[in-house]
Length: 129
Image (cartoon, rainbow, N blue to C red; front, top):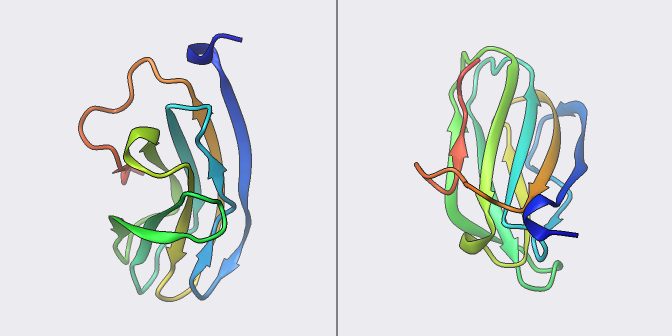
């Protein structure tokens, strides 16, 4: 199979209510150039939701990367995307979500062999509704 045509989808997090920090399932980036995480979120009511990309060399011991982003209180429900480039992280990655209050959220990922990863920033949170 041509690596540049390879894609794989994973279900990372069930759509349920989260009131404390939680981690998605991890992604092994060994065969892929980029991953697109799709987050389905309820409205963010009173506290911001903070997303931190974590990585690991062995798939067991994860540490926070410097790449953190958030959605402010008042953001409407919808689907958001986070792009991760394999060249910017160690082999295994996951997303840590800290809701600040409560948020209902589901997450999935699509890993791809890249022909053109996002150029603006390696970690892009689409905050459009």
